[in-house]
Image (cartoon, rainbow, N blue to C red; front, top):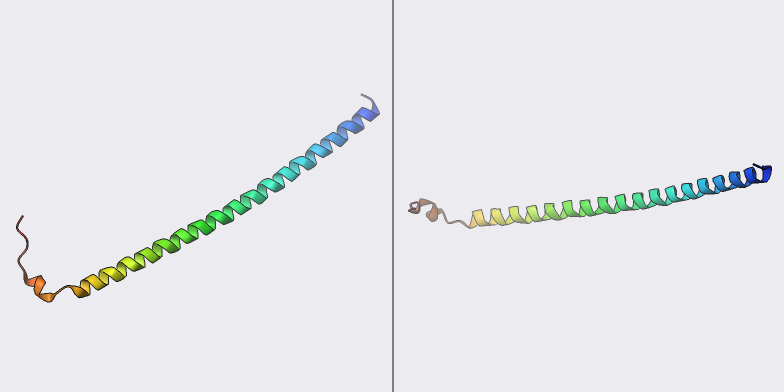
Length: 79
């Protein structure tokens, strides 16, 4: 190999390394954005579930307070 060929090979290797590093940076950036988006979605889902649970509990308490005390003395249903 000539000296010029070695220099050209070294330049190409550096360029490939820079390209690889750029691709790695892009990949890490995309991964970080996806992770942040997934975290937001999970947080939103948790808040939605908690809100639904709260609504259900409020309805249950309202239903319990609406029950007539006289209905508690009725005989059980026949099967």
